[in-house]
Image (cartoon, rainbow, N blue to C red; front, side, top):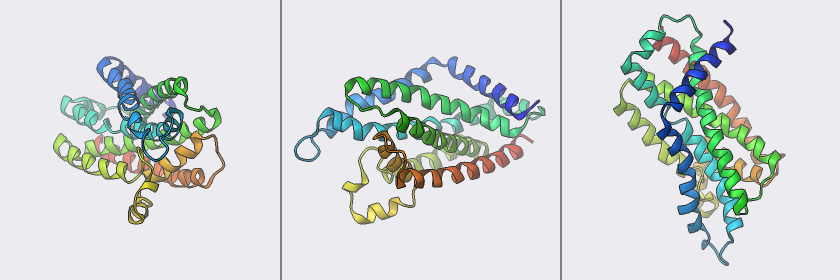
Length: 252
């Protein structure tokens, strides 16, 4: 069986697991709406004169989409620990299927779980005044799918390495906060001091956020977009290669 067919089989399995847990679907769809309703209004009075709802959404929605991409893959590690403890990984040891296909089945599920709420957010915000530039948003979604793939493969591999929730939670939560704060995902880092902006350049998520705001404005050919893809494409290849090695050792 080809790697593509194997990947689609594992992808279908992961999707069915998600469908059987409707609460995860509900929370995945409701969380971005909570950000729009409870956080976006706080940005209207930043600066003088106060910004309009349209100006707030044009600035806030790209960061929110990036936050969704980052969070969509974060839970892969907890799922992997559950599969280890319930014996699923043990049963998969005897399958001749490619370990890369096992990895990508979960990664593609997480990418799908990013795309669905993202389209919902864009649709709702467009009715509230958010300017939709289809070409820019398509490139943005492609960039953010790479981010979701990186986080999903990284989190799942950490689950296989640590094999228990405590170690995984310590690493994931310990890195999640500084990565998001140093990316300007909710508030532009231009509001911060020079030293904070300098540190942010060492954060891959920073380049994605910077490109997201430019792409959401419909500007595809920009230095921010080039820099983001120049960072994210090699990082995706490196993380997937590393995660595949982790899978081969864990499911040997």
